[in-house]
Image (cartoon, rainbow, N blue to C red; front, side, top):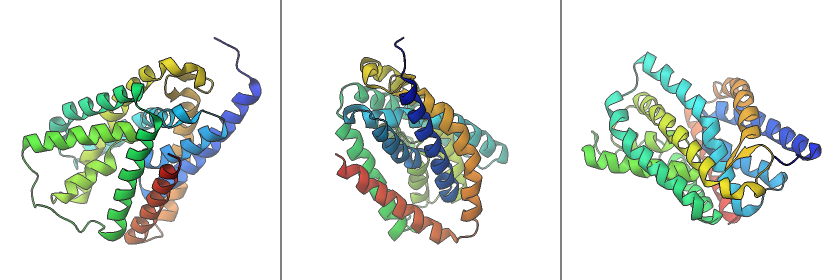
Length: 274
């Protein structure tokens, strides 16, 4: 293994540490722990440490999925204990979600960075507009559709999650609430998708990035930064409580609008970098 310049490693660790603090506070404030926060933070970190633009967004996505994996597992276990999840939906969705994630990771081998930026920017932007304008008021039908439409939706959620570096919670929750699922059941069920999405995506992006190891920062495996994973995961978990304290002092609609504005700003920033 080639020697790693100490100065480069110190800058990377410092940038990732600050990113972990910011990620945790924002995640705690808005009640999310996934890539909607991680990817834009990592995007700026890896820009500062000089990761080439051609592979930077893929590195953000892979590292984000790795960081999400342990959090998703803890979250789903907590929801299962509380009995809020719908296990039949999780079982129906798991296989098509994994297929969608695998396809997204395969695209990372050949697709240009612009594809990932466009998917993230457009999806985050549409989600933001939905939160700002509609909130949770839009309901398409009072019950969930049949098995095959549900499988198709899960495949799309897996594919988008893999391309965006998110755990799929926001996308799945939005889909479930469109069909009249109570928000707490929707959130709990969506947490169950985070585990297969994050684990499959992490290994997929590790493999996809192996041909680009020369362009990766120190201590990376493919498109996953081990420094980013090791530093951000514990720090963001610890600092999330400070964001949660702020969140409890704000109304639900205020939080919804604030997160919508955050997502919209992030979408614009990413799209302008294409």
